[in-house]
Amino acid sequence: MKIIIASDHAGFNFKKMIGTHLEGKGIEVTDAGPDNDNSCDYPEYAFKVARSVAEGRYDRGVLICGTGLGMSYAANRVKGVRAALCQTETQARLSRAHNDANVLVLAERIMGPVLALAIVDVWLETGFDGGRHQRRIDLIDQL
Ligand code: RB5
Image 1 (cartoon, rainbow, N blue to C red):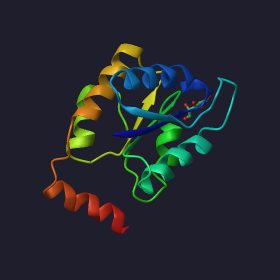
Image 2: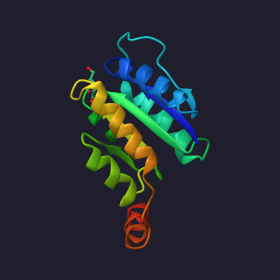
Image 3: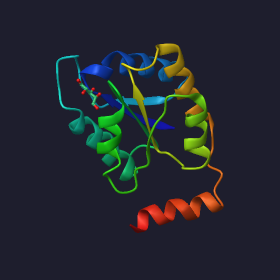
Image 4: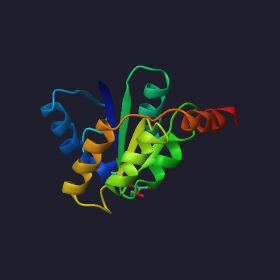
């Protein structure tokens, strides 16, 4: 599995932590920036990741900002992207099983690092259930 990850300044520490965590599991991770925690604009990074996933260059994307809100607003503007802001492991599991989320969004100013890594693991390990859920996803793309 190939994953692309990015953040803004407020998600920079989680980006480094999650990248290291995923590489430790043997997952190929591309860091789309930023390179430091200087103040920056989250839409730039959200679009980089969202477009890469929508174009099929990566299997999944991970985005982190302070609240997770701005990143999810921006990423979900890209057709074909289903970006899920998850604050619990249950949301992470269901965002995959029911919504086939292809981008995970996390909030560094809201949650702790242990929970964030648990959410990442559940999100990556859970498959899509398909069936009636596929029909609903298709309806989103028809909009
Ligand atoms: C940055 O200060 C903060 O606004 C950003 O990380 C994010 O929370 C926006 O939704």
